[in-house]
Length: 191
Image (tube, rainbow, N blue to C red; front, side, top):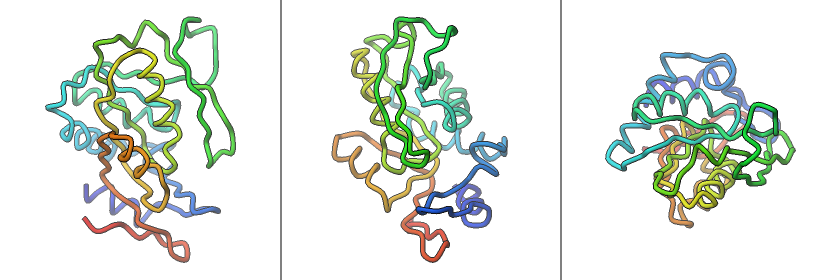
């Protein structure tokens, strides 16, 4: 995914604590052509895996998840972080912590949208510590469904999320992998 890597190297900003900000093209101001290519590339990696649903967490992974779901021709569900009047009161839930926001959340998915025979692809924009993905996996488990894999646009290899998920037996696919940040410069892992 050369376009994503180029944007990551040229446009992303590194914030305090090595937070990589990609809001100018991936998760706030959306480069629709790029995100469509990202979605198609991630979907291609899971095309033969009988995925029945795509699941992401509110909110920065939604755009990528939508294009993955469209490419796989399956519904996309996003776990809500807040109980609202718009969500069924019967939900699967899991606690998760956002290190970048320094907040904990309860992720919620209506029980009517996940079934035992579902094979669910977990999707996010960035994989760092893996807490959101672990929360989503817990929700899938509570529904007695199966995780088909984890698909992310960017993996931060200098953090433990990808390693933890792979040790747990999850297939993790990332289009760009950040090996480290040196003096505010993003260094990608070799392909």
